[in-house]
Length: 262
Image (tube, rainbow, N blue to C red; front, side, top):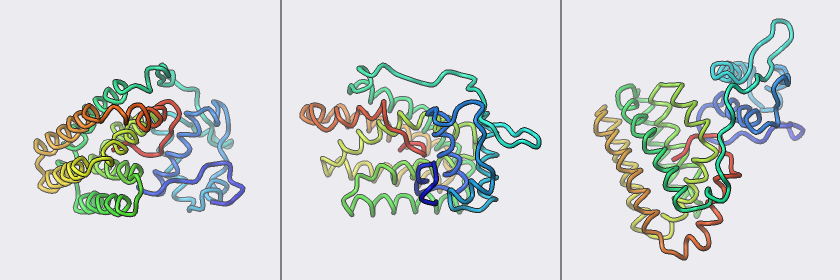
């Protein structure tokens, strides 16, 4: 992307068209692109994101499919008025342990079904993408990173394998809040070696069930993963919530992420 681009850099992971669509979607949902605003032309977007026009075309098509933009004959592509109010939470509540747990409960409901569908519909390429995402997460953690983006990419790969654009869009819509909860859970898990090993084993169990095309086992593995995430939050020592946990939980109100969460 050129240095003069008005858009933030697209994040690694997933297909280019999805990353461009997610970045534009975030600009629209944040209000930086307002209803009635005209998007830059296809060649301009291609230059600003350093991608092909085909990638831009696919990204814009995705935005149209979820009702964020429309094409006007001979005029261009325009941002639509939001049909529903934006999701928001009381700031004082969102920084609490209870709020983080309830965000994980939302993830539990969604991600169990996503994993089950992925087991039914996955291709060999999908399985490899999920396996690669686990390897990338391992590398990030071994290099001293927090693994949040890589964890998000792992769950995004599962969502892609489910082949349901509505579920994918729902996860994308909730990503701002779910990403903040992921930062909290990963920071907590990094404090204890047994927690980190449990998470790795749970990811492998989800992958194995999807690879075996065992939908019931995949749902159970994903549900168990989220249940264990809640347990690990509940078992976090009080010092974590007085210090790092409270700071990271504040991201529930201010963080944005391009992908669906862990």
